[in-house]
Image 1: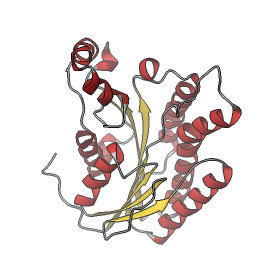
Image 2: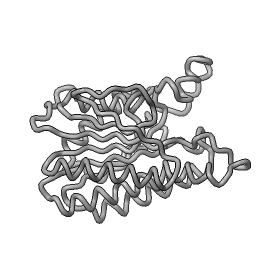
Image 3: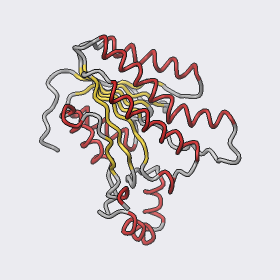
Image 4: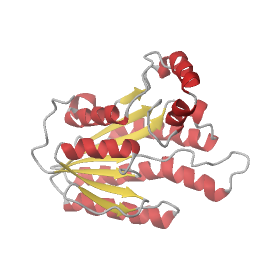
Length: 253
């Protein structure tokens, strides 16, 4: 995939819920290396803007935060009419919510991050594409192929299942200048995630698990996923609407 061309026209990348570490950082680096300008919505402080990246403070705790985020995204789209956009909604995990001890606010946060946020973002994006046919958008959704094993919160599993159903419906109704992709991830080597921690703390046990659960025995790197995403953006006409299992074959067993 390294032979893919750099974007000739100025393009915009929006990473919602990441962009400074792990998978979000890998995606940001891949797209900015190809000529995209990145707008990164995240909670972390202390990041200065640059020619390649603009950091936008974002913390989703309730309806007001969600409304403000949608207004900001719509403003970016409207100010860039005629451009190519790639939007990645890297939604959070189970957010530490325990099924038996969960409070209403905790459940709401899980559903906001994993279901409501990507659904409403895609709604606004679809509306923009219908009105502005000279613009094009690649919209990426993220799910998990190993929720039952490592993210056992029923709220998280329900949210991801509902998101996948929503994605299939969206693809059937999306305007022609909107391309949508669903990535179902598993066994990704991200330093602050459980797989990486397990591999470092108990390499022998992790090796046996990978050999049993992952037919290719491959621990996917964030850069590999990022390169694949850019490839989809470059050839969206061929792959539009795809649900991609990037699990090293885990989904087959």
